[in-house]
Image 1: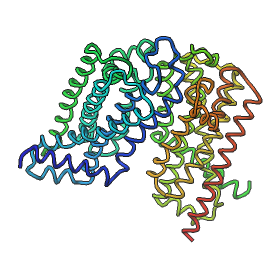
Image 2: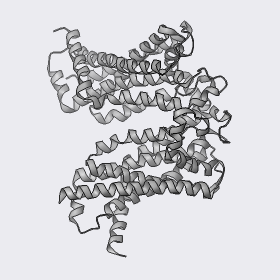
Image 3: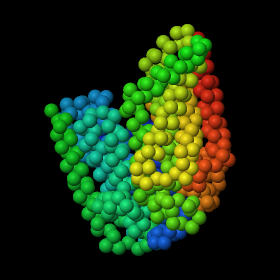
Image 4: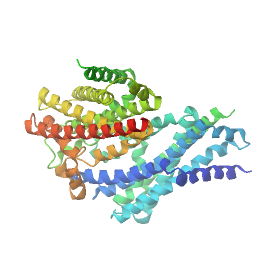
Length: 254
Length: 259
């Protein structure tokens, strides 16, 4: 049986868990919707700040919350690997003649497919509630590309930690690092309005470029100058954390 | 001392000692609010220049009251989780075989939540002072804020314990956290109501948490105010009464199942 067929089988299993165990997926949908609603409402006054790039807070927070949802989708897949390790299902996979690459590719493919759900839901909600998209379909495409690749990166991180910790108790560690990476960037405020140590961290945080890539179409036109740093950050992040996940599976392979 | 009072004292002491013997259970309640404070104080500091923003020195001064209430919220989940673990581990059943006052189990845990929230408030004030916080209300203001926070912490802890008594599951108690978190976000915890509009502003105005946090914030930004303190105290006592009623009903239901 080819590696791709095995990987697809594992992917399909992960996707079937969405309707069978909705409690594992619903938070990755509900929390981003909640953040859009509460942040857009609570911080609506920020648009009055001189130099704030958005006309409406929905334009500012929709891409960030959507990326958050995609990242959570990736993390949920990694936690699924942790659950399989805890309940012994992963041992059965390892005992099978399945290529190890397929065991890694399966959950990571699932992460990317799962990201389509928050992407579809949140972009639809944004359009229904009047989000501005001056960048048009290309702007939305940038958000979709960023969301899918961020889900892959988050999935690689989560799978890598799960393979090392072999327990669901690693969940807080997985989620906390993601939270810090997102919020120590331009998640809340643009770079020109950040101050102090957060500004210094945001300037070197690759998430800042990823947010710029995904937000540009909602704030203005899509330009190559804003696109390439974010794409580079996503590609390098996927490569680095892919290696992290690969090293993780090498640790569990007998 | 009456036997009921002795039971209250012993179980209160147990709850407080247990909390400090297992620091892992209160570390989230200490670290997460401080982390939010650190990030938001730096990220949102420019917001204080908005016309209509309260006259603060920094966003840190605006946010400290929220951080203290947030800490009480996180701590309440720990209180409910501890009760659920007592139920799961069988200690709860052993306790009720003993000739003790039935309410002492609840009172003990509420006292633990009260103490942790009070100490937490002073810890947060201490850390914030290191980073330049000034409290216009001085010591009296800080005492007022920590007093209100401790009563709210006890009340939220009692609400969390009612979940624990109903479900007997620590996981279910943890599952209640998002709802409490959402309640905090749909308020003036992170931004002044004066700068909100539309349905969100209306929702924040109806949310008692907004008024609670604003009364605590008043002590920090404007100075000591009896009126604001009494408003915050009334809301905090309301939360405590609600929590005690809910947990009392849940306790009776659980004991009736056992009978």
